[in-house]
Image (tube, rainbow, N blue to C red; front, top):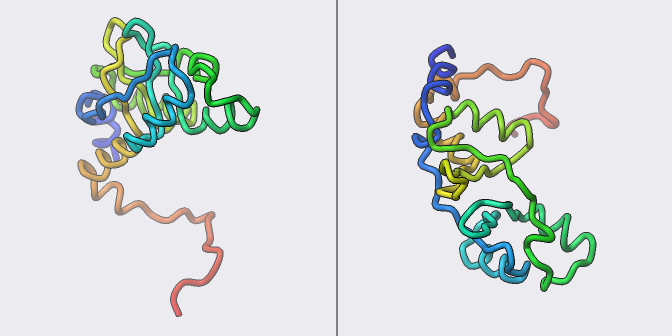
Length: 156
């Protein structure tokens, strides 16, 4: 477990190979965003203005900020996005990304450069794959939680 902890502090986000970011301009509409999300089969878009990250638009934003309040799909993304999203840089340790995701209950983090320009998107799925790939014995050999019991008996 000490080895895992050390690697999470030393290995950088770049080792996780963040996915290419999918972007939308801040002046575009929710309908545009939904079309892009459907076409690209993604749950989040990075919102940019003049090439810089200004927000993130996720499925959660669509539900909470558009559909739940009855806004039309013609609304501007800048009205319904999450502004100033928490992000990471390629050189940040993986531990920083995990902490930020955990603290904010985020499934995605934008990866930005030093000029606040998006260069990728990091998903919790990529972190889990990294952990399983690099530390299978640590991940697969965790003891069960002694305070958790199955809801129903297993087997026949």
